[in-house]
Length: 278
Image 1 (spheres, rainbow, N blue to C red):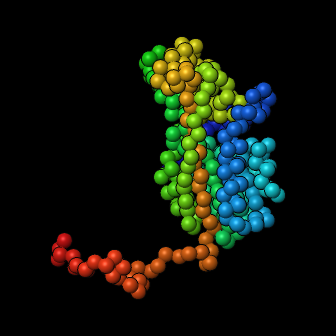
Image 2: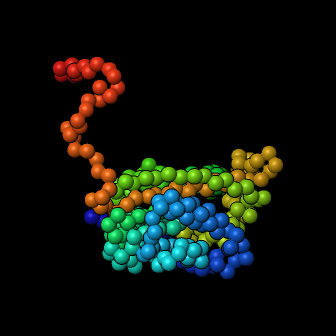
Image 3: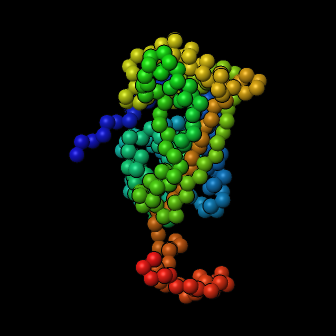
């Protein structure tokens, strides 16, 4: 079987992250990471368990080093995590770039001790929908066709299914949306550069986007996604995936047919047999 082409140009992604760290707006542009970190810290408090061997998979250690005593590893295709070595693994804001997200989840599960906790945070399907539609319309108007420009984002239902396939117990997927208002199209693009989140798709065009396309995209964006005050809305959809390494102490589903009471009795209604052949 032929392997699918890669989604991400890893060299370009790492180069863009390195370049972003040297930009003046880099620190403030990491607001999504800080929001994700704050949410993870709240979730860990709610779990009410002390984690002694945490690990964080991230391309942004300058933010995620705030997890106490965490071992920080890069979000490479093969994660440098030892099997069964960690009671907590956090995959922080990099899963969207993985060519094999299921493989990343499986590697994280194998790195957990029994009953260890896994949390992943990544941008979800509605992220930058305004920019995606504006660029697509602009490129169609100017060039008569489309090219890969914005990373495709997975939907929360699909991500929850990946957690089940990866073998996590008690998987949960939830999300929250953050809307940011920018003064201009240029300031949005500058923020994305400072985040290290510009186009690193393997199938991208290997040339600069023309001024005509960018001008058309700016006009489409302003016409469709501006606030009454003239600022431009940008949506960031953060998805959280939570699951546990399987363990006998966890709640287990009942075996079919093992119930000791009838549903009809619990609901206080008469039980009616199904019609034959129906």
